[in-house]
Image (cartoon, rainbow, N blue to C red; front, side, top):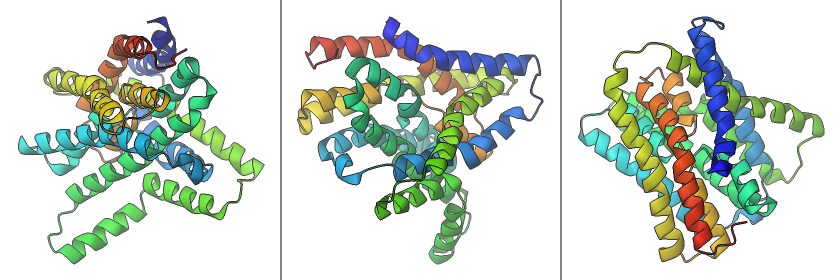
Length: 318
């Protein structure tokens, strides 16, 4: 319990700092939106570029791990999206709902938790999970959001509009450019790496402060959105690791070490990515902010249970 608590406590603290700043009006009425714009246009693109540019693709080829973790993310994402659309939700908003249930906080909580539990040898697998989450799943969700926003019905016009919109989205352009750089085999210069590192490290704290500011503001439908946010949090904390475990142990029969890491990262709470998307596209973010908050709080218990189960299975958890 204490291990999980110590890992997620800084997340609570930063959200609380943003909440208090909002309650006492320390940062102004537009602070949440402006901080989120910084994250979307500078911080997160720098992080995505750095992750992709500094990757050795030969080391990342772990097909069983990739398939297991991706299945957990995309099954829950897709099921939520389809269910919400069947209930009358538009594709744009249903895509954000799906992101709420499938987007693990792999970068901000995953790396420190894996370091504490498994040691530095887990970093490569944690990097794969982070790429799948912040680049692949994120890209699919944004494409779905953009498709939902386009009113053009003629296929070739729709494709042109979508291509133009996606080409201007920094959250898609940055990882693509990082992939191009990685393909050259050239290491990033020291100054450029430091620049990207500083900007990228600012992304998560600023996003969490922005979330706290959003929670401090009064929003319509806050109470009515609570059951949905709780349901999404349960899907994230229970359904995603369950699907991942079935794939890792039952279908792909991974070795103990990568299987444990896949399940543990899948069991992480919802990251700030869905909130960034909701704010960026000016969609209602009450359910999204609630999902992040509830899943983060509940993860203290669920992660502890997950760690106990992994330990009892003799998977080399330290």
